[in-house]
Length: 434
Image 1 (cartoon, rainbow, N blue to C red):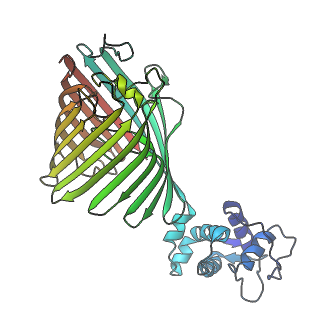
Image 2 (image 1 turned 90 degrees about the vertical axis):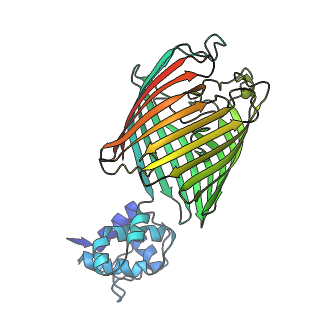
Image 3 (image 1 turned 30 degrees about the vertical axis):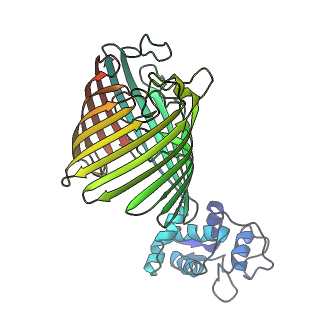
């Protein structure tokens, strides 16, 4: 297929970020100064990006082959261009990748840079039903009261864009929308698309710097399953250290995990947050240790907490891999500032549960049996299916039913920490990833 040089440059001008600065003179005698592509031609020629045919002619009025165009792009690639000119060259390199490869020119990096924003996402359906013989907080305070039987029936849509800024920095985000299928109304927070996370991420060797609203990262089980606003520094190789500092939002969709953390009469909705964590491998053992410090007047209203506005929680986790399929995990946390319900512990025996679960292909599956004791004053938003303030057994099953599609089922039988009443829960999820 043939293409005129002028047409190619016009396309590059539309999809690229061409400079509008005029060159002092037009070196190509057969492209008139009043031509509609003059600005782009003059700018690229003035910057030494386009050499033409070497005889001061551009021959823009005749058809040229894609192979001839690829030869000129290859010359432009060797110029180490930057800014707007580099954007034009990258777009042309992506367009003529096949011809450039035939010339022996590697364009993988340029093809990647030509599309600086990548999108991942998922759609999922969740069902959850909790049955309390007698909810432990009913009668204590209307603020904390829940029905004895609760159920959830929701659909969530999520987009996760990643934008490459330069070789060291990226910008990442997460947008969520959740719909309550029972009412066709908002789910957790809103049925509108909501920006849940956005942060800049820079990597220099073994050091990662994150700024913005990002995942907590340090202990995503017994203490947190959400995000915080602030800064994070992560460094190390065999022993990785993570330091967090910022604010943690106690509302805005977080408090449905933990019925005991609520906004108090003073209007306190956030907690100041600092944490440090360490993770690493010792043979077959993957271990982690963390310390979390949060302060908020809202904590003084926690059941059994006392008149204390701080959380000082230590978390520890270890997963021992017997072989590639079987592993045993212990997770422990204690809030030294709370008077009661200040400990959490979890024991999990998993079959293919702790390996890297690849959803690309169908057929992979795993199971786990866990015993959990979750004190509601250890952390604001624990990950587990069991509610904070409960203890019991949990059986889970995870499987790829189709490529990029997995099914997750859980069943819980337990007791409440307050009152020791019966508590049961069923949870199911199917998720499509793209």
